[in-house]
Image 1 (spheres, rainbow over the protein chains, first blue to last red):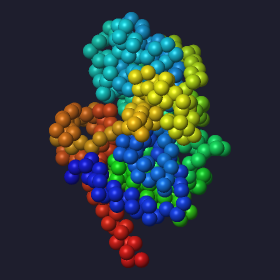
Image 2: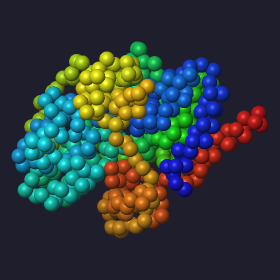
Image 3: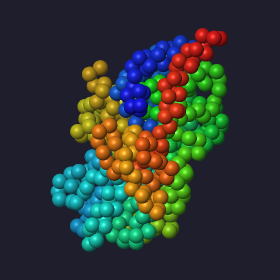
Length: 362
Length: 81
């Protein structure tokens, strides 16, 4: 079976659109948590197909977007040092900081390398024993166990010229933070499928019960998203509030236990600052005391860097679902993917960038 | 960033330590070596979901077929009501 094309079948997608239209008796506001889902929704026009029945609110699930500016400044400070090879996922390189971005620092001669996997950074460290190799680990629970295994292997091999600048974040606390704000409009969630591939979905059951809100763990293809929306609206119409799993071909309730074990071995859960949202309790993952020697923040003494957000960017409101990108005065004018004011325009998973790419002509 | 795509395992490189296990996967024609550390149960021929050079989950074909079948099941159920 081709697992990708099967879930992009337009006839099947249309059947689910029709089923949703038949099901709804009132207008609902549903937030897709993950930036990958946002990208699919805008790319395939799912929001436009269902505009009369539901409003899709684009959630804070793009890690590039929610990484606070201070981490970009810390990355720039470390990467600018002469003996450093700084490794990162590609989409972090264009995030503007208070001064510049990593790509322009690279153009000035810094040794900054885009890696596909953090394990590539470990190999670079092994091959360059006289250099300090740093990996910039950002992302949600999908990516965190991968960074964790790097730390684990670095310690196992006593790889002392390798360290990690880490800004990993957790999905459940930010969902709770959004639901705790007075003016939120969210009535149901599409849960982040690949985060749950790692973590399972037991963490979401207390949230669904406490806030009386349906959470449907969903995949990323059009049929996945439409099916997830159908399940979510069905619950809303029937006044039910539970966790359902649309993405059962990938996600199990307990998640990936070997990955969770390595995360437990390497990380502590900590309070974490989110770009545009502020500090959220227990929402971050940081290297624990056993792995302190591999923490780039202490190795390069950048803990004290604390950067404020620019005032003319409203990405915080976009991340909370309070502002549609096209209603921002800077959208497409002072703020474009070539010259982004804020991170929601930088990453292709950011809501502003998705609207700019697929909706600019409308 | 949580982008992860299906791929088929075409070769497994055996090691004594599950956390060092790797394999070659095929992404519809593009082949790449990835870590199989987090899918110790995976065997050659399995489909996995790959994120940042790691298989993060096995793909369950029967569950995939069930999802694709769900609309027809729903339609049949609604018609029998």
